[in-house]
Amino acid sequence: LWMLDEFEVIHGGRFPGFITGKPVGLGGSQGRTEATGFGVVFTIREALKEMDVRISDTTATVQGFGNVGRYAVRLYTQLGGTVRSIACWSQADQTTYLFRKRTGISPDEIESIADRFGEIDRAKALDLGYEVLPGEDWIAEEVDILVPAALENSLRGDNVERMRSSVRMIAEGANGPTTREADAVIDRRGIHVIPDFLANAGGVTCSYFEQVQSNTNYFWGKDEVLGKLDVKMTASYLDVSALARREKLSMREAAYIIGITRVAEACRERGWI
Image (cartoon, rainbow, N blue to C red; front, top):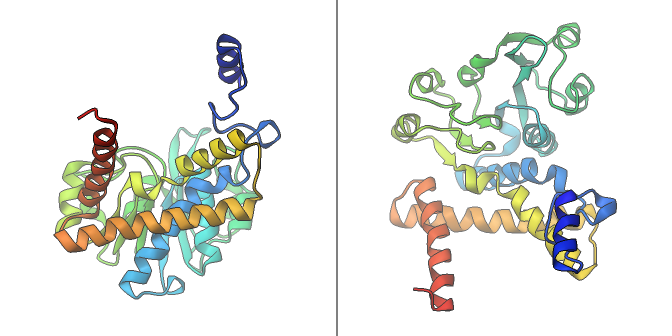
């Protein structure tokens, strides 16, 4: 908000859409907090439809329990999926732990023992019957879907071989979670990857929605925001998936091609190239 105030003073006007992520009472958007995590799950849902797999028949593990992981867990569970484990950072112990419940993790229960930064209380988790394991074991969980939603370079050449044969999808909630070496192994194994700048685009998409609402001074309810987000994320996923199949590309390659092509076409329309 300081940046917005300074910009408006310098330019002598009101520009409420210049900064996004604002508090709702100061021109922010409903649904912005959930947007990135929900967007990840919207793309997972569409990928499973293409595979002819019901989400209720799938299991997942999530690395990270901040805004992305927390809300991905919530929506994935609401849609019928089972989250078997969550890995997160412990500030107190300066290490990561994996919290596993084979029967499935309840979002309400796990949120009740986590702080606002996404750190899960180890002692309380043990009391509730969770297994507590080293955080790096998240990649070796026997699940259908891996959701790296924490750090860059989480999937690397030195750990990617630990992935179980059960894994058939990776949805990149974090930015740059997969190195080139890991990508090559994942591609060779035929695992479906939803690349980061597609899977986690829900946040920036909702920032665009906030900009629209601020500039028109007309604000939408949370259900409307998340409904519009669903439409955008679904369309984007289907565009990338269709190109990948048609040209026999990886999902990452197809997403890059679509993104670069759209920018190039806009530049051409402006007469810049």
